[in-house]
Figure 1 (cartoon, rainbow, N blue to C red):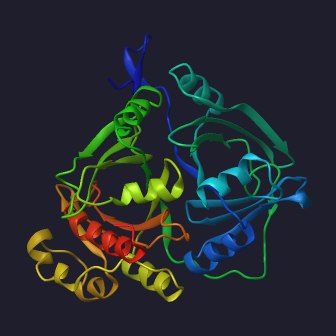
Figure 2 (cartoon, rainbow, N blue to C red; figure 1 turned 180 degrees about the horizontal axis):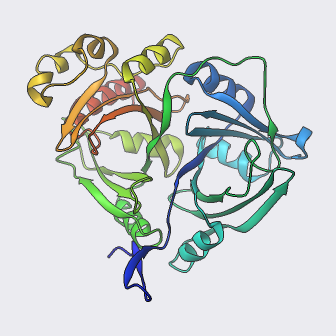
Length: 376
């Protein structure tokens, strides 16, 4: 049963106990933050925002914050061994540690989730500098992933206390990426339902879409997925788990190489997917290849669309329709040496769904890559 809302005794109306304003930032633990930041500038068009390290009084780690419209990525590296950041990278490789969520009250967010059974990551702490104050608190979710609650209503600085503005000479142009559409987590066998329950009971989310192994399957492999959304729909977390198949599924491959549960991919919204993907390809971002036969009956399957099919076919962009419109989407190959984290680029033309009609073509493309790695 979802505890999405509590009832206000004065008005007898339901009130969301964890109102979220969206994704504040996503933090990656990496082996080399300087080089990772350069890659996301060069390949994805992120703009330098802020830096923290020994020069700013942070002796044990360095962090680079980058921004593109509403997207903020932070790349963090430990400067020595024998700490949680270095241990995380050793175990998992480069990966996402923190999915930070914007709130108006980080203290209330922590208290409400903790009393519903959350595991504590960080009690509320308020940071100060000359630009104001910022309050953080945090809880654990699947694997070692963390949800950090961020209240920056009284902060006017570049990113947060402890950081200074980062203004390097090198500053490539943006690529049209706009916001975090959703973040997908991979969990182990029979672990999807417990984490669905966590998001319902601890964070007040609700399950808006479910896919079983009949929806997401190929000749060789299958998985199951449930999409969890907060009350206003600003934050969506699909959760995947493996399902029985003839061969190893993409989720199993991820779990093997990541050594546990974690964030599989981040979907980033754009207002012009053809333009964005063209720029990303020119900058070296590699995408999954879709057979040209996918486009032979595309309009029969999805109906009339505004876009010309030729550039969609040339770029490998997928299209799907639901009752409210259609969407266009494409998926990168893994962006790490381990076949773990990748990105989705998505443009929504009214659709609220997640591309169910594309699952078969997408997962067959993923399996072709798995087979090349010898992991199918």
